[in-house]
Image (cartoon, rainbow, N blue to C red; front, side, top):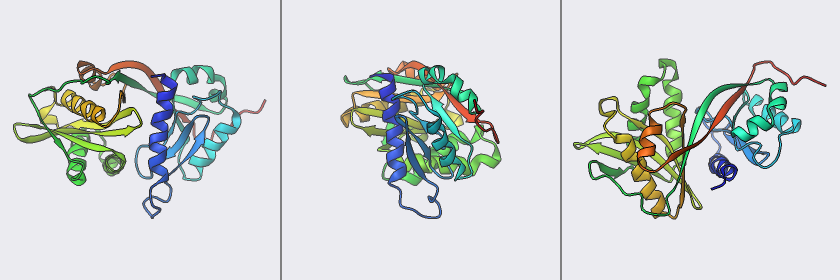
Length: 266
């Protein structure tokens, strides 16, 4: 699958979810606005508050970055963009002019799942789509040891948002106990794997690989022929995903605009 098309597909998936949420006090700032092939996205109270796929249809212009600034500024948030490396390199001068600085790298993994990826019999796989709260508790618990105490509410909100956006919620059991889980999104022929974790007591035992494999199989059963997954660069999740058929494709960069920085006029 063309990498830029994959970026646009992921951005459209989240934007569609953001635009279809009923408005309430908890969602009044949730929304998405199109920008140069992608979207500036805000899922209120979660960590999904950045642009995706931006600049994948054409070079970025100043009016694009102005739209991004207005979208996030009206919500009291800093402007952030997660950019494909081709976009980041091509538009580096404009991004610098507008005060954007690289914050962290994200590894994109992908794979063809047009054939059966197989599944290990060493783990019991459970579909928790109809038991969303149970899945949220499981996945949030698996992430909580890596998050500062003052970010736990945000973590739980992010997990809730991911559960609500997902096409399916998968869990892995070890010796009858819930050990980890992950979310699956399917749109057209693309499966997105996101929001996964493993409880500390079960790490380094293949739980994450089992979760990835189960979601690939489920995505294939729903018509997907291609799968995408993102993870922080250097994460152990890269190795476990590789073992079941996904491979690192490229690293995109999260950019954050420096507070108070305005574009330099020339």
